[in-house]
Image (cartoon, rainbow, N blue to C red; front, side, top):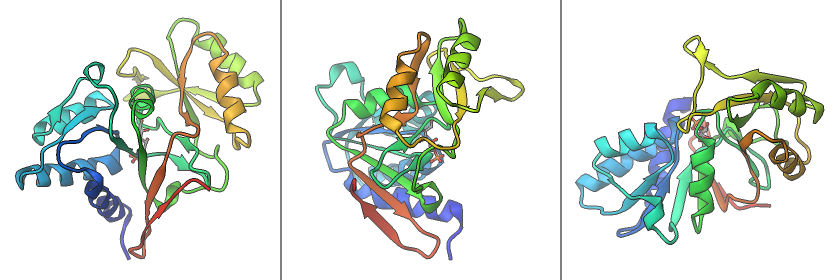
Length: 228
Ligand SMILES: O=C[C@H](O)[C@H](O)[C@H](O)COP(=O)(O)O
C-alpha cells in the first residue's frame, strides 16, 4: 500500500508523460503538482524542452529552481494543456480548488488552455461537491458585507482565511473566504450567484473546465477519467 505522499508522487510522475517537447503548458499549484514539477525537472536534465506559465508565485519559484523556462501568459495565444491539482472532484469533473489560495491565477491559466488535466489522490474524489470549504477570493474592502451575502446563499459559515496568525493575502493582494456549505448540489448556479456579489473576485468552483482527472489510489492503481 502507498501512503498519501507516495500516491501524489506517483500521480505527478505519471502526468509528466503528457508534457511533450516544444509545448507551452500551464502548471498548477500545490502538494501534488510539487511532484509533477520534480519529475519535469528530471526530464529537463534528460533533454526535454518546454515552456510553462505558473499559476502562483510558489510554483514560479520552484519551476525556476528546477530549470523550467517561464513564459508570460500575455505573449501566448493558447496553452496546449494545464496540469493542476484539486481539493474536490465530482463524477462530472466539476472541481473545488483554491485550498492553497491560488484559485484566481489557476482559473485564468486553465481558461487559456486547450486541455485541463487534474491530478489527485483518491481522497479528492467525491459524489457531491461542498464538504471541502469553498474558497472565494474577495477584495479586502467590505469583506464582511460580502461574507453576509454569501451566508444568505445558504452557506452555514464563512471564515476569513488566516495563515501564521495573520489574515492570508493572495498573490494578487486579495482575501480568501472559506465558505462552509456542507453540500453544493448546483455548483454552476452557486458559482454564478457568488460572482453576482460585488467584491467577489473569483470562486474556487471550476465548472466544465477539466477534461481529464488522473487519480492515484493507495493500492497502486492510477486511473484516468473523463467527465461523466
Ligand atoms: O490553491 C491551490 C490549488 O487549487 C491546489 O490545486 C489545490 O488546493 C490542491 O492542492 P494539493 O494537491 O496540495 O491538495
